[in-house]
Length: 348
Image (cartoon, rainbow, N blue to C red; front, side, top):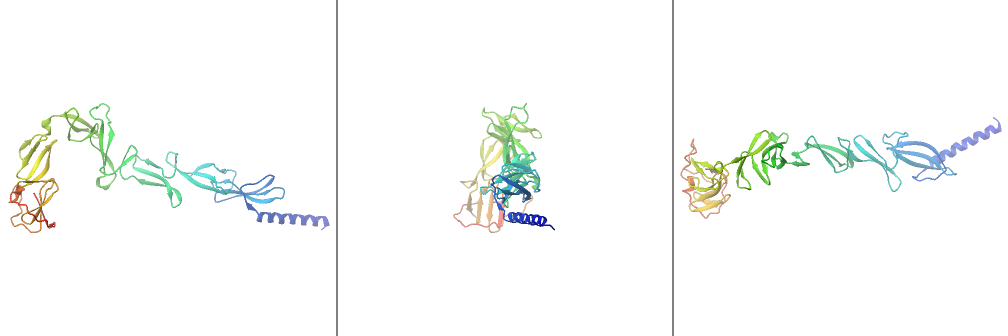
């Protein structure tokens, strides 16, 4: 080999050796100055990097160029501040104060292609399905759950809750809206049912009566499935019948047989209080009575709570003959405050 060839080979070896030293000594830096020589690029963890040799001295640097949504080195990448939509999420290429780039999800994409930011929700399938976008376990995720209730006007109503919906029949001006209630039959899906009429701020259940501001009486009726309307009613329609006797609306009377004060209210008999002897007790009150029993004034029927079996009670086929303490006539009040257990409960 000639001397010139040997010198050329030695120079090439020295150049390759210097380049390797430069690469091994490269530092990470977001900023760089010209002139510089571009070298190879690569992608790692969705960030695209590049080796450069900066300045006349050829100082090696590793520069993050941007974010690669596909995690593959190509000419298509996001510059800092740019965003892209991938796999139902919106990602952003963000640069920190230290020059480090981060490629992370900043929002979810709903079924209509609109962004949902952390904490936002969307209601789908007539409100029966709720889509959440939130951070779970340090990562942004979409979670779908079935709504526990009935949906109307951006609100979910729980079981047995009521709300008002607009009138659906434009030809019926008798009501201002429909009274709705949420049901869950047999622990299955939640269902919205029409349960009454709404006039102003007053709600009247189906087949019930009400009085308008002008003094007239009306009845809420279901004309067809899902449609309700108000029909005029007379005051006689609001009367109550009990033991072959008719009682007018808002009338009151004492029933000696049941030991109670009654009232007729919009066609319904309401028990207002209980009577023992000459004394009257409000609904819900307990008093000690003779035969070592406790008497409870119940809104529907009288209740006697006794520890001991009462000899005068017999099993009968009819509820007409209720025994010697019917109407509380044979009872006497006592001053005992001893609490009774529920070993024997008798209802009349």
